[in-house]
Structures are given as structure tokens and as C-alpha cells.
Image 1 (cartoon, helix red, strand yellow):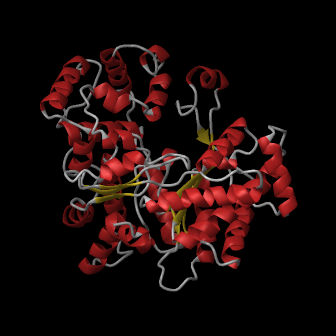
Image 2 (image 1 turned 45 degrees about the vertical axis):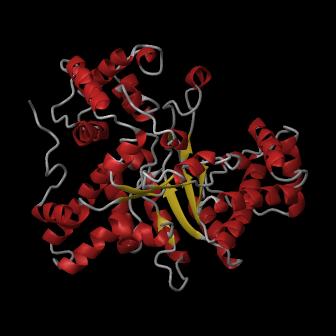
Image 3 (image 1 turned 180 degrees about the horizontal axis):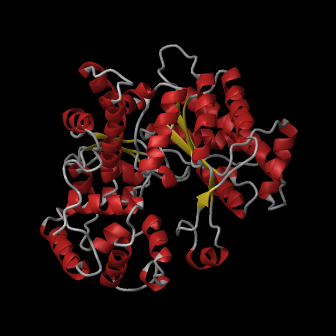
Length: 468
């Protein structure tokens, strides 16, 4: 049997081993952004089959399987769970040097005590052994969360969600992890699509009659109030690009009316509406003392044939680029800051070439007393939650800001076993800091290093978000 995941996995110097074992390893997890299903948490979904738990909805693995030449029948089709698992095993042994090779074997070791390499040859046996483990140990959504030492989870929720599953979770005294909703109003920005009018109709049913921009913002305010009453203190926005486009109230009214009537909206009008809506939402977030998150830079559903067949979130998205990012981002944040409603904000750029642009922009808007790094450079996201992506983000943050105040890792995942990526991040962090110590670029001071590691792993997020 070949052992790959061992105690020193990814710990590449003696100081890293020391930092990880003394400070990082035992820290709890503060998962302030994920896509876990609150219904599965509430109902404590039981997992009897590794394929459902491990491959269901995982577009990272699906992309690798397509690159391996696996037929879609075995990826998102109706092949049996065993067949899908075996096709993934055949793919994984060809994923050497891909982060999936690390993540997958780390998950197998951490959650199922499987320390041998998964291959096509042993796939049948391991499939049976893991499924037996799942059944014998009554592995559930909640047991995986508690096993992972997770203190807090913020899910991702549509403004019109009723959040009753969060109420159910709160009432379960035997489940101690705090689970809170987070406001994700992406559909409210899609003024150029039919989804926008459908959203406004539903928002009207839940709040007030929406027939103008003013009533639209009032409806959004009422839903923010509702989320706040349920413990929500974070908002998140998934945007293709960062826009700043000046507008007048009359222009926004006209764009809003066109959106309701499904009329054509220009690129400039879309940019104006996005600027307007972020500006107005930032006021509401500031009033509630919420944190505003912005994920930007994905170009989605690029394979039109696959989108028609499989729908969204099936693994056909990629990193995008844009012109005038630095100008747009600075002016957008300045617009909010000038009117004194720039909330605590986290920016996540999907395109890693923008790390220094984001980092240097953030430094322009940190001048608020008693808040350490009010505007944060978010952790490596999606295509960047890899060793290279994490190291690039941390190095840029250290160059442009204060690494000491970084709020650290998040899962951004739909999988209950993706908490292994926090361990992955912590090992990479300790190697990064350990290397700097061994090169005599930062002092080998126990108190300083303990503070740095524990703050990034947990304490900064705890203090920044103020949720528990």
C-alpha cells in the first residue's frame, strides 16, 4: 500500500511542521462563505453512498473526468453510483500535479481513513469499503460538520428564500455549529434577462408592490431586514466584472422599466444599473453593520451545447478578464466611502493577474479607526484555491497590505467533506511562513508566529465578522 497523505503532507520545512502542529492543526473552522444546502443540514441527511457524497455536484471533478475522455453518462448521467466512482478513480490516477490529486486523497484520509492511492485497480474494493464505513458509522451532514471542528457556517441564500431550514437548525440543541444565512442578490443585478422580472414579481409578493426603483430598493431593504432577524450579517455578490458607470435617477428608472418589460438593455445601461444597485445596497449593509463580499471574474456557461443539455454550474465556466478594472474598482469604492457607507468589504478576484490591482486598491480605503483591514483581499477562490493560487494571493496581500489581519480560508463549496481544504490551506500557510522564517526574512519569534498563524486560521474571521 502506498501512503501519500501523512503527518507532514505539504509541510516542506522544519518550521512549517512546528507551526502546523503547535498552532494551526487544532484550530476550529470559521466557514463564513459556502454553498452547503441548509435543508441537508437541517434534515441531517444520511449518506449511504460515497458517489453521492463525493461526486454529486462537484464540477471540479467533472471537468477532470471530461479531460480524461469519460462519457457524460458516467459524470452527470444515469450511470450507477459504482460505475461513476470507478470512472472517477480511473481519472484520479491521471490527475498527478492537479490539485484534485491532493484534495481527493486528503478527503479519503481525513474522513474515511483510506491512506492508499485510489486507482482503477482498487476502485471496486474501496467503493465497498467506504460505503460500509458510511453505513456502520451513520455518516450524516451534521456528523461531518462536527467531525471537521466547524464552529460557524454561513450559507448562500436568495433574497426571496424563506430561511425556515435555518430556524429548524437553530432549534436543534444536539447540533452545536452555528448556521446562518447570507444574502446573495445576484438575480437582482440581471436586469437584462427574463429572470429579473420574475424576481421582481416574487419580491413584490413578499414585500410591497414594486413598480418603481424606489419601491424596488424598499423591497430589498425589507428582505435584508428579514435576513437580519434570522441572524444574517453577510451579503455576497457574484459579478462577472466590476463596473463603475455614472448614472442619473431618470436613467435608472428607465433601465428598471425596460428590465420589467424584457426590452433590450445596452452594456452601458447594465453597468449603470450594477453601479447603482451596489451603491444602494452598500447603504443598507452599512446601516445593519453587515459585511459585503464581492466575487468577480467568472465567465460562465461557455459551452452552449452543454448548457442547453446540462444547465448551469456543470463545469463549463472559466476565468475572465476586463478592461479598466483598476479605475472601476477604485471609483466604485470611493463612491461608497465618500458618502460614508463603505461597509466592511471582502473582494475576491478570480483572475490571479489582478492580485496586485486588488491589493493596492484595498489599501486606499483602510482609513477607518478601530477596524483592522476593513477592506479585505479574499482568499484564493475557485480556480485559485490551489497551492499556487493560495501562495500568490498571500504573497500579494503581504506585499500590498497586512497579512497579519487576513481573515483566511473559506470553503465556497457544496460538499460536506470539502473542509479538508482548510487543512490544506493551513499546511500551505505554515510552509509559506516557515520558509520566510528559515530564510531569515521574518523573525523566529514564538509569540509573533503564534499570533500570525492563529489569527489567519480562525481568530481574525471571528473578530472581523462578529457572528458568534
